[in-house]
Length: 190
Image 1 (cartoon, rainbow, N blue to C red):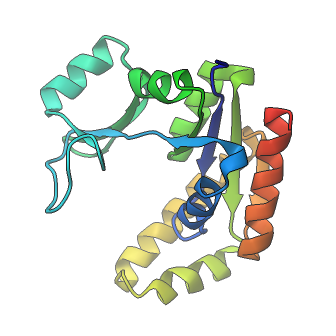
Image 2 (cartoon, rainbow, N blue to C red; image 1 turned 90 degrees about the vertical axis):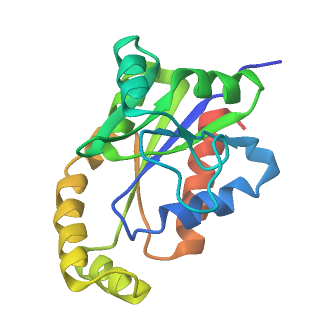
């Protein structure tokens, strides 16, 4: 059985990345598997260890970082870390599936550097920041203050786009899904 390859998707919040990934996961010819991230935060109601996340203590998380067990990780909030374990990458790719990773921009750059030609990195861009602001407000899940924070973070994240193999603008969801799918098929040699 051939080992699977790695597909990295990164994007600012509100660009439709999660929706694109959900649609790609339903395409059997892409043979995708999803990695489960590890976190040092406590499980929320209804979350299970090994399903939404691998829940580990902050001390254990930092010990694993020191032992080089993560392919990427970040302390998102003080004392709250998130990352992708190398064992998780190997679990998915070793089963012959292609691993799709939904990770932040710095993590995406690090994973691409580590795996080189065995990884394809795709950055999903909004058409522009005004459209992104409209989408974030349309969700009706965040306060104006939170939206302003997300937009400021998006400007920073957009500065990483040129470090990715491909940049795809999500102006039309069906077109963006098609472009990402075609990029993956080309990468897989199909």
